[in-house]
Amino acid sequence: MHEISVALEIIDTLEDNGYLTGVNKVDSIKLIIGRYSGIDKNYLSFAFQNINDERFKEVSLEFISNNSDEIKIEEIIVD
Image (cartoon, rainbow, N blue to C red; front, side, top):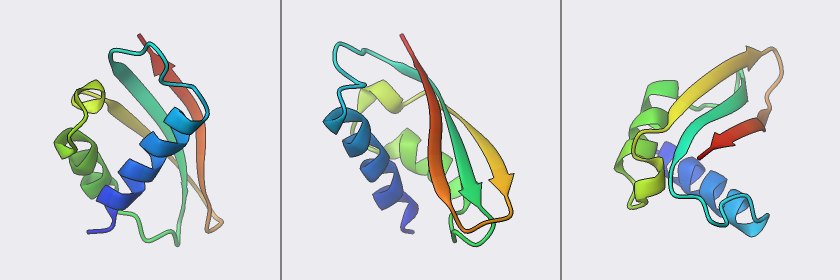
């Protein structure tokens, strides 16, 4: 299940770019995931709920499909 690695990489990217500074809880992440990305939406949701980071325990993932083989973070809403 490589979705755990994907979830951890998303968190690392957010932290590296300063988006999580002072954030206690992430409510929602909108993801654009390509048709051929090989990511299972249910597994990715499960991964966020089970990683060792309390800020993401109740995150809601919104998936937008497109016809390319692309993964893109479009928006994050945080408290």
